[in-house]
Each structure stands twice: as structure tokens, then as C-alpha cells.
Image 1 (cartoon, rainbow, N blue to C red):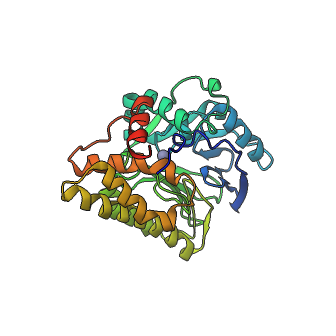
Image 2: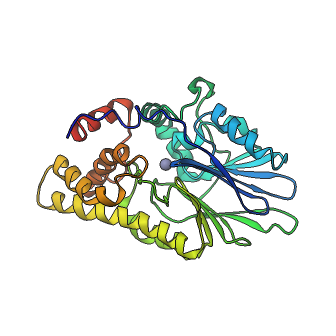
Length: 320
Ligand SMILES: [Zn+2]
């Protein structure tokens, strides 16, 4: 294998952003595999879902949203703690920043390291990185479920924890009235999975089962296009599950026979490449994914904190 540029450090081309109105007052911005964001109108306020990587990037999203509504942002919902999802928060002037209680703990434990790691891996997303004022701290947390009444005849937004998955603290946003689900990074549609902070065995089973149980008619995953219709929604969920299943089988087999991490990486790469190799961030994610899964299979309960230095070591070991 020839030397590959680190993570997405050489991937600097702008992605095209598409703002879609999924229902009255329900918006999704997708970006060809870059992180998706969304917004939901209440009667006299807005709920924004995800914050992008920097205030400058978030400001560009808000400018697009402001062509549709000028309501103030009352709630900013963060699906999980990853830097490219949360560090743009200050641009929203939100009254309340909502996240799972584990997400708040993860920001405290590893937010700084994750910031450095992620901005090094994906410099394109770190638009004017110096505009980030500091870590983003959720001001309202919950453990299982939180319901936001949208007012008028707009129904509710239900924020739900479905179990450990992409991280220890992922939540989804469910609009029962429209049967629309904002799934965060628990589901990707035609984009590779990042599992470097994941709990693969929980995610592949019970957590994805609970996501599927909503029976959504439209799903906005963490990356990739909006899935429209039950069939497409289930396809996105099952694609996510398949990616995880193949990784667990391949890495698990090498681990069980006492092989090496490098062998596990090569086998997982070979098994996934044909179906997923051309999808966004496949080569970027896989070394970190396999490294975490290897730890998980070795009995390391919680993901080891990624730092800029550890990123390079794992990259050089597996993609070098
Ligand atoms: Zn993430």
C-alpha cells in the first residue's frame, strides 16, 4: 500500500451544500458527505440540530436558514460531543444548549483533545478555526428522553437516547407528526462510518434496533443524503449495521486467532472496500475504526482518548 496523506488533510475541495425543506418548518442541510445539520421551527422559536465545526461555518448555514425564517434559536441540540458538530455553537446565540448527560461528561473529559484531533484530521471543516471561542458546554442535559413542545399545531420534538453507539452519548431527534428522524452519526447514508469512539457491539444490535423502531419516513443521518421513504430509511440503517457487522466479523476473527492489528486492518479494508471504498471518508476513518474495535475486543471498555499525536501513530502504523 502506498503512503496516503493523513486522514482528510489533503481533501480540501469545498463540498456543495443543499438545504432541503422536509416538511413545514423542518430543514436539513446536507453536504456531499460532510456533516449534516438541521433546524425545526417552533411556533415562535427555532431548534437547531448540530452546530458545525466553527462559528464561521455555522454562520454560513444560518444565513441560508434565514432565507426561510427569522425566528430566534431557543434550543441548540447536539447529537454528540465530536468537535466538528459542536464547536460552531456560539454563532447560534441559543438560549439553551441540549445534549445527553454523557456528552457533557465527554466534553469535560476529552473535548480539548478531540478538538485538536478532529481539526487536524479534517482541516477543510475547520473554517477560520480561530473563530472558535472555546469548548461548547451543554446547559441542559438528560439521560433518557426530553420532549420539546413546538407550540401551535407543530407537535413535539422528542430527543431520545437509544444506547451506546457512535459515542457514549448519542441522541436522535424525532418529529412524530412528520415521522422525520434526525439520527446524528448513529446512521450514515452512503458515507463511511467513523467508529473511533464507538461501542460497536451495542451499536450494531440494540441501539440500531431502537433507531429503526421509530419507523421514520425520512431520516437525516450524520453524513450523506436525506433518506426519503421507509425503504430508504431502513436501507440507511441496515447499511450502517452491515458496515459494523463486517468490521466486527473481520477484526474479531483476526483478534480471536491472535493475529495483529495490521492484519485486522487489512482484512477489514479488503472486506469493506468493494462496497464502501468510494464513499466519503472511508480511507480516513478505517484506521481509527479498526484501532478502537481492536481495543474493544481486547476488553478496553471506554475508547482511548484520541490526540493529534496518537492519530498520527495509528495512521502511520495502518495506512503507512
Ligand atoms: Zn461523530
